[in-house]
Image 1: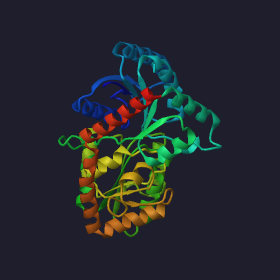
Image 2: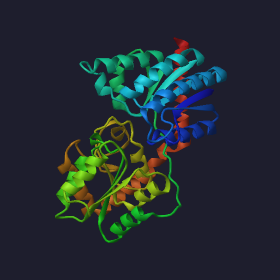
Image 3: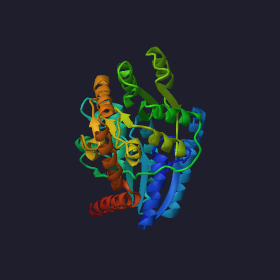
Image 4: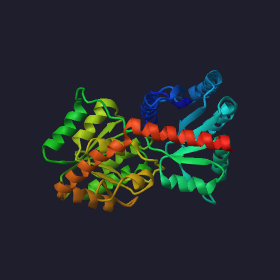
Length: 370
């Protein structure tokens, strides 16, 4: 099978670039003929003028590549968001006659906006994308149910993302040394990795840690960037948590790997439109117990009390109680961490690539049958 994968540039921040490259290697390892084309941000950050100039050039280049390669299947890896729909629908329309089967792989989506009464323009753009695509890959059964209610004329499949282990060697910087010193001194290190936006639950986690300060020695480590980074720093000061919180900024590679290793627990009280958060798989790979919300892929892959403690979204006190429980129960922490280290094997690149290839073949066969 000849496959053309369209994925964000490797320099782009976020999980899709490293997931895409790992998946491409896995597909090649199981015998697929894979070509790659890049789309989206060329650098971080990127000015609007650059976007307006570069996206049309990207579109022309990708269509030319598809025309040359003539793939059996073209896969567009993208989030399901308003701004990406505006970008993706023209690309899908241009690719339609240059590939046998056209598939969209949504890395995170907003099926709740597809319910009756949802934003009309967003639903119209989504419907246009679904009409152009022969199939859609999703990361959770919750997303599958939402999309299936919205459009019954599209072929949907659930796939997993591969677990991408980080580098195992490198040099500690000042931030890493500080975090490791906090843990060595007996503080309970809680790690958050993700975009700094309210719907990721980071502000709820901050309030939870503030509620624990008088009774537990907890240190919160925040790795990420986003539009609310300034608000987060201000909230840390207002809650008098300056000594109890380390804000690391965007981290990748060895520095991110070491943050997982330096933590006692990973916490992501998200209510964002996740698929299955890459950071949860990374925390599992590091053998960490997890506190998160029971939504999307977390509901599919994590078992309560075995892999994670589930908390309700937007409930800082429930999150505080979960942190308190893990702090008090080292045996539970150990059991959950060991279970997660074993369970992450289900996301091994070769296993995920075979599942992915089967999903693409199924969509292609259904298209031929119709």
